[in-house]
Image (cartoon, rainbow, N blue to C red; front, top):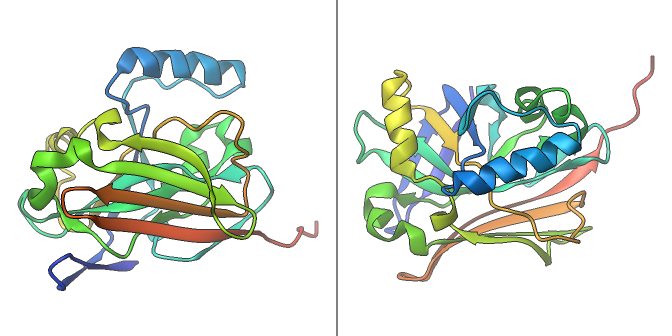
Length: 230
């Protein structure tokens, strides 16, 4: 099992062993916009979900704090997201950190769930306690950059106001019996900026809390594995 460790703004740290990993999808607050996006994806061959918002189980070992992601081909890309990390039995035992859901776009046309299991969910090493930022979540920005060797070109620029709230997903987890220490859930993502190449060699995601000028980030480089034999 994967154990993640997070540094908190007060200088303390918390560790948790991941037992359940979930990726939310089609999770914008404006579900009319989500429906339009689903129609656009359908034209590209991506199957529509049977329900929105969606939630996909992912192998827990794919929750990683890493600076390097290996992929099988050149059509994979990240998605700027936040992640909830449950560390204990109550809603005060929840951390919020930056995350990047690296997704296989070739596999996505066959199954979104399969595509989410093809690469890691990369999480930041710094986090906030959700209880400490709950009253200003909509002010926290969520951005991503891409590049070939360094991530310097802005590709996603939004805020947590664009997405369903952490408490929405905590309710879902409680309803499904999944609210327990070791559960990690990624939020779904915000729109990409048109014209920016998502199939990049480096990704960086940043969440910024302007009230305290604190940040949670994750960044990694992407490398294609050798071609298979056979």
